[in-house]
Each structure stands twice: as structure tokens, then as C-alpha cells.
Length: 569
Image (cartoon, rainbow, N blue to C red; front, top):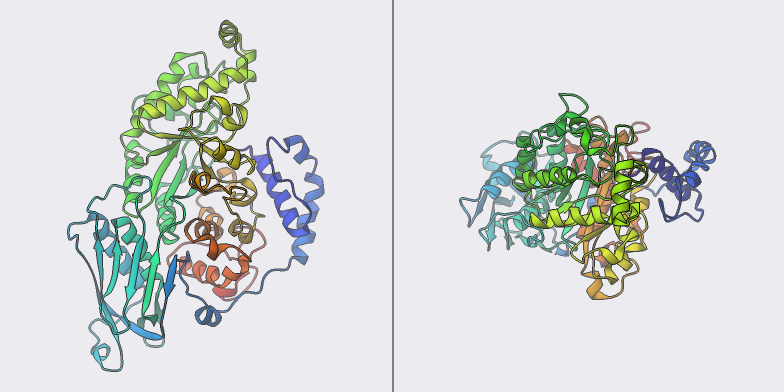
């Protein structure tokens, strides 16, 4: 979204503030110009090296301390209790349910058996049946709703009860997607004991009652600035489900490239980097279904009217002129025909109720300086700013026509709040103070404030991400209900498949817990969660997720030397 230099410099500023403890600027874009930030570059560059030498981190817990003092569940559940009995998980563990034909549950059962039994285990070992060892042989799931459509606001609540005598564990949920969250929690209670070569579950009986705090808990990935293969996107979806995150915000196109197939306008993906770096229409449908089976929505973003130079590679008439190529030509009806065609095609395969229209960082100089566009503006008595507002509202109407609830980045709200319909959702990234104002005017809100939840800002530590309270400054309970949740953002200037996962994890887990768990459990010193986060990072590693060390000085930095996964820097 933001230009690379701006985001890189702001990232350095945020690191400088964190390391030195100075009062930091809380705004970018409107509150801090690119010129202002650029002036800090020469100051900040040497600071990084000096401050890295003196950076003091919270003391890590070793694995024994983690086991002794923590529940290990990530994110923390709404309520839970535990006992002191150890169970052995039967190698022939069975998952059963009252929905024998559930596609979602059947797929989940296969996945979680593989996640629980990660090492060879003797099958039907008779010693497991002895009187001295309690064996858990079945997990039974009871789901009230038989529908398996993954819609916005779907009920993800569940309860999990694991008796201490080896009787079946019971997961109860309103929907299959709540059952998925319960299965994830159950899997996190299981671990392989190398001394006995068995999978164990400690601290039975367990009783867990759980539900998310916010309905939209997401990660943005950017496949325009660097193309990501479908397999990498699917791996990210897997990892999101482990942290009970439920939205993949797919920033599919931008001015650098247009890798997406649009059947109605087949020349659009001529704007891809190469003929190899594209997504077919079937690819997108495949990713959407892959996400549904894991309880993860796929929400696309088609950013208009800015960030769209790549559109004109296939259709040059979308540019105001060959030498002034964005924003998209507001005076050309063909522009909106293309947008409507994109929306119509995507609506057939995207199932999420929300759709992102971008709308950020629009410079209207090309409109006011290109003769035919300037004449069109003059006929209407419009400024470039007026045309910007009209374009955003037109795109919103086209999205609403498809049955979507439109989202825009915060600039349209900041620029022309009085013209926005209350149905539009405001996605905050620049100035967190805009969020209470948007809610006060009746808008629903998503949060991704850059100073805390931009993953490409490598200097932002997990503690800052964990401490980010999206309801800060919002006291009215009715206005608080307008906050749908938030997203961490992995903008792609320096992220491709070689560093995607370690940029996303483990810092995203901090936001995941903040968005899932009750405020009463996540307020206060974030370092209380350090032991559990290090354990969760190791769990991700054991599942093949290339999560970076928790306590590295910069996000995605590799280990600085030998050490345990639980105490790695």
C-alpha cells in the first residue's frame, strides 16, 4: 500500500523509538510527510547498529518452565481449567462426529491425525491397555448446525472436555468451524514423549470454553510486488488456522503487476511480471476452497483508483495518458466496465461477504494535467478531489451490487467522511485516532495501524504487536461493536517465498491472541506471554512453519547462534 521508501523509513523510526525510548510520531502519511521521514534516514541508519549492541530483551523461559507454568494453548481461551493426570493418546485414535458426511470435518480429521502423530508410534501396543496407564482413544465432536458455508461472522465458539479416566474427549460447537478451533486446541495439548515413544496429553481433566473476541482476524499478503506460488499461499492458510486466524486478505494486484486472470477482460493479466507468475481463475477458486476447509476466509483486494498502472499494460485506455498512467481514467466509462467485470467474475468464486476496494494514496495530478480528463472535470465543475470521491463511491456501488460489503483504506474517510455511506467499512492504517471518529459516525472499522501491525516493519517487536489494543479510545459499548477486528500486513516489497513465513511468524501470533482472547487476559505486560509464544513458535516449527526466533532484534532475522528453540535469539 504505502510506498516502499516511506514504509522502510517509518519502520526504522519505529525501531528507533522502541530501542531508544523517545517520544514517537504516531502518524504516517497525513501526520508525517515523506520528506519529513527522509530527513531522518541519515540519522537512523547508524543508530540501528549501535542500538542492536545494547538491546536488552526479556529473559526467555526454558521448556521445563513453559510446561510448569503455562497452559500452552495459543491463543488463550476464554475459560479453561486443568488437572494433574497424564493420558497416553492411542495410536489408533479415532475422531467421530454426529455429522458423518461432513466434508470439513473429514478433511480436518485427516489433517489433525498427522499433526498429532508426527513420529512413528507402535500401533496397538498392548502395554497401553495396562492398569497403570490411562489411554485416550476417541475424540467425539457434536455440531448443532449442519451447514458448512463459511460466511462472515460464522460462530466459532466451542467447548472441549478431556476426562481424566480415558473416556472420549468431547468437542461441542454450533458450527463445523467452531469444531475446527476445538480440534486445534486439542492438538496443542498433545505432544510426543521421546522417552516412551508415545503421544501424551498432560494435566487432564481439561475443560475449555472458548470463543473469539472479534470476528475478523486476518493477515494481508501482497502478490503484486512479489508473486507467491499457490503452494506458499496454502502454507500460509495452514499456519493461520494454527493461530485461529480466519481471514487471508489477498492483495492480488497493484501498480507493479497484475497476475490475476479475469475471464471477462483477458488482457488484464498481461500486466503480470512474466508468463510464469500468474494466478488462473481456477487457482483462486482452489485457494478459496482450501481456506474454507480450514475455516479461513479469502478476501481479495482490488485497489482503485490508484496503485493500478499494471492494468494498462493490457488495456492502455485505462491510463489517463501513456505518460501519466495513474490513477485509472475517471473520465472513461470503460474504466468502470472493467471494474464491474472484475467484480462479477470474482463474485462467482469468492465467498466472503467483505471485499476490499483499496482507495488509498491517490494522487490526482494526472487527472488535472491530462487535457481530456481535465476537460471532463471542468464540465462538472469538479476538482481532482471531487473526482476521487466520486470514483470511490462508484466502486463501492459496484461492490454493493455484487452483494459485498465494501472496505476502503482510511484515506476516503479522512478526505470526505461526509460523503461515505455508513455501509462502508473503514480500514485504519495511518492514524489510529481516526478509528474512534469513524465509529462515532456509525462506520464499521478494521485496524492495521502501521506502527504496530505492519510485519514488513521489521523493527516492530512482538511485544508492540501484542500490546496493540484496537479499542483504545473507544468507550461507548455500542461503538465498540462496530470494530470487526484487524489484520497484520505483510506488504511485499521485500517479501517473497524465501522469507514469507519467517516474516509472518511468530509476530503475527501476538496479534492473533489479541484478536481472539479476552481483553482481561491480554492487557498488561506482554512479556507474561513470552514462554507460551516461544512454545508456540516451536510448535509452528515442528509443523513445518518457518517461524523466526521470537526474540530476534529484527523480524525474520535468523538465529544468532546455537540454542534451544524455546530460548533462541
